[in-house]
Image 1 (cartoon, rainbow, N blue to C red):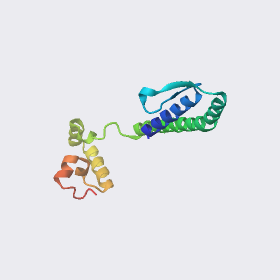
Image 2 (cartoon, rainbow, N blue to C red):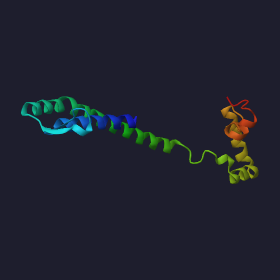
Image 3 (spheres, rainbow, N blue to C red):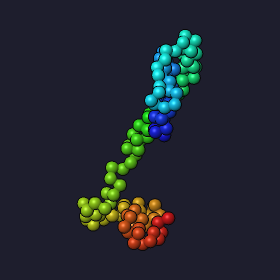
Image 4 (tube, helix red, strand yellow):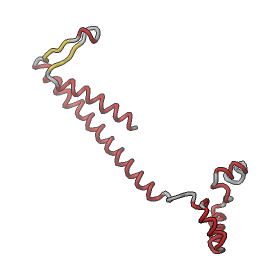
Length: 138
């Protein structure tokens, strides 16, 4: 999405730049035979109208969509960081596992939480899920 918006912005900016300038660059057949020419008054007036009614609104829309996309991205990143757990693999931490071995209440709560999800405990670990061929994890 960002690449598309950047491409649209630079395309419309290039066209707008060519329309606003009083001097135009023209090529006959290739890069080697181009020349600069001052635009006549009527062509300048036509180009100004084209810029005002075609290019400027398109540039405004592209800037508006890019701003909205940037705001949406920042908000979604903020909400994801506020909702996502700090460390989703805390249950694999050796300190946590030692605490489970020592504290029967914590072990019971962990077992109840795993049972409430309806999935075996090995489903949360990639290695053990692969070893069990994913049985019961769906």
